[in-house]
Image 1 (cartoon, rainbow, N blue to C red):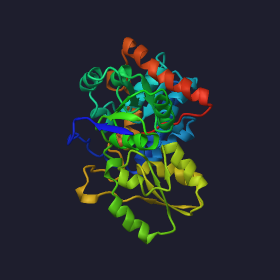
Image 2 (tube, helix red, strand yellow; image 1 turned 30 degrees about the horizontal axis):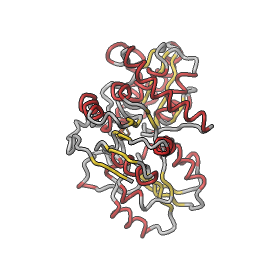
Image 3 (cartoon, protein in one colour; image 1 turned 120 degrees about the horizontal axis):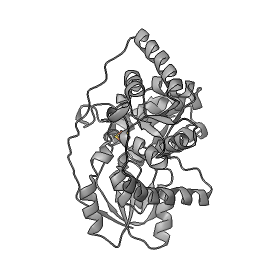
Length: 355
Ligand code: SF4
């Protein structure tokens, strides 16, 4: 195995958004009533990511939408008869939905909902890096802008990254991987592939602490540990199950333990607890005050998808809420995206992505 580290925008200070204002129960009920009406009036469907707040996931379920990972959100939106998709997630998810379904209107509650992986992989710098290594196959994670996707040979999600990199390695391809360094390092270790790693990170998963996790495990020795591979290697090493959001929910069901310590965004607890109502779930500990993420295992950008913002997006739409992807960019990004979908179809496996 050969892993190379490349310089990247390290120590980046991300401009975290302010936490949304708390709503009273009455305000929530009023927003929910209005959103249900607007979804019908606008022929729209709400698709929500696993990391959004539980009330948003519940609303998506109650209105015939879906709660899923980024790729499944885009595919659901593509297949649903609604002409407008309201994507409760972060910006790259809206873009992926638009790439797959350009004929539909794709709205986001807040276009300022970013992702540190996307922000840490600017198109110009990444393109320059790829151009400096033209012999490498470029594999990018779904958590990237449409422009970075358009530069890639392959797009992958966390549930199929291993298989695709194994496939490329079997063809003796050297790989540029971006942007998540922890996931790239995990895949390089698992596959032995020759990979150049861009040094991006998810501010939520990067925060999980192996030391604090060992202390928690000592308190609950009978608990299984579930870890998303965007977490540091020292945390991944302690896992009983490593996988994407959907894979972790499946692991929660399959593992015999009644107690589960979960190292991913705590938004996943809504669907995971539905899957295993008899089990006890614990949030994996973060590095606390020393951490860079001020959200404590909850993505600050996912938290922007509040009820008020969803209602406003449905009422107003337009430049403040609608996702646009340049047609030429879309055509380019569709090539590596379809490559992944076709690869998955050949494997007869369902691709379920991350963030
Ligand atoms: S949880 Fe991490 S990977 Fe997911 S959207 Fe937030 S910053 Fe990006």
